Image (tube, rainbow, N blue to C red; front, side, top):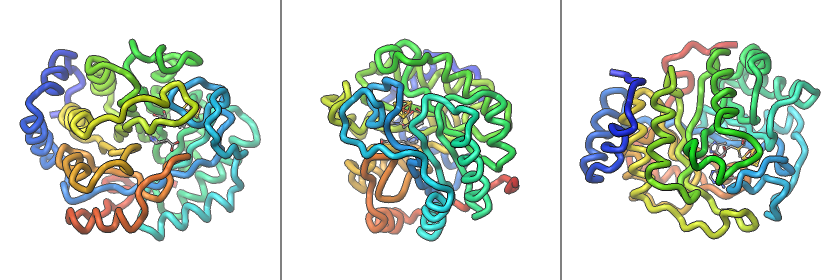
Length: 323
Ligand code: SAM
Ligand code: DTB
Ligand code: SF4
């Protein structure tokens, strides 16, 4: 049964259960709603890199921090379609384009992104974008161009939000998510752990997600990749048990969602990633780069899939491909 009325206390109880019980429960729910052998493979591409006016304390692309990121203006449509084709050939079924923007503006850059969306959709891939804040009208235009999903993370709890980002609010995030939802685009929304938040903050973020009128179709769980030059450069790396608790609690409270083991895989062993899949993760980012930081090589992921008997999930599963 899908519930949107989870209480904070219920989620807290789940999150703090003995970890092996939590994994067992999540694995059980996972098997009721998904084929546990199937893992979605997504590829990310940064289509516009760096120079962002926001102050997200974790981000390599905020202009105000000296991170050494290679700033790049918006890529051309053929460059992007070439990357999407390569991603498809290496087995990805979802292609996600990220831009270091605070929000979308109605200008020629947005028109170009709409062309990219049309082109990637025509390749038969699920096309996803993450471009910052969107109005309802912009969401509608993306939908008409064939956008399948939009990523916009809560990042952290409402109460920790102001310690991480001051240039926009938690409510701004919720508003964009609502605009995406209303347009009929699939919602991809999750967060990051390792930002100096408490367990209570993690539970509260999951509570916000699990009590949305409709759960996100996809919930990325990122471990902070600490970036030199940002205010969070010295944060300690999160342990696998913290990732497992987040993934398992997301899986139990939002059974139908794809739960994505997102940033942070490079530092994880095969065994640690296997625990995350057991706890209900069923999606990853593949390709040697996330947006600006490294990710496991294709060879390593092929070995991971073969070792754990995993198969890539087909695109548009349970959907009709929309044009
Ligand atoms: N600028 C847009 C925005 O902020 O919505 C889109 C791109 S932004 C890089 C997408 C998401 O990536 C962020 O919301 C955050 O959750 C995640 N992210 C960014 N930097 C990260 C890092 N260093 N470690 C983990 N996750 C990160
Ligand atoms: C998400 O939740 N994680 C991805 C994607 N959505 C856009 C981004 C991870 C970025 C990690 C840091 C970097 O490579 O810059
Ligand atoms: Fe800009 Fe997005 Fe990075 Fe924040 S997370 S600084 S909005 S690119």
